[in-house]
Image (cartoon, rainbow, N blue to C red; front, side, top):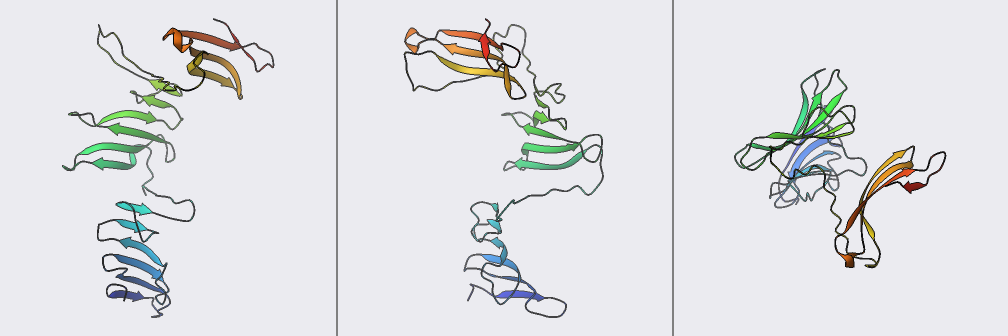
Length: 231
């Protein structure tokens, strides 16, 4: 016994070698299979467990939905309308009150191909808010939906606000030689894979306290790959 009865649909020629079957996989789970009804083992396409988990390509889903495939599994969302503006499709997260708390939105741009990806979050006690956009040109906007460069960060602060952090580099390393200075973080510009300029935050010997220098480097020019400290 497979743990329950089997419901089976054969093809138009009533050949049992080409069927659609629903059956009890175990005493507590059900499966949907296609193909050879004479050998169910390994032929399950969809499994629903007693815990409510759904497995596609697996008989033992580890979460509410698990999709398994030997290579390149894909989840596809298709808007069958040819659109030049508007929404192609969403991934949405809801709370227990069925209110949207997070959202990824694919929006059409100009033609039936161009697409922006918009990321929405919901602050505590607030409304759903767009936090980031990746445009069809590859620009990333944080705090803005019209990034003018590869990375555009927009912040807003009131007059009198002392600190509004836009970018934070936090070095948590603690190993190595404490008698040597070390880099806390680096911003680098490259051209065709070659370093062109670097800004480096360098901490003095840790025993001397949190003494930090900002060093500016540029390429020495020509065909060189060497950087020289300028300031």
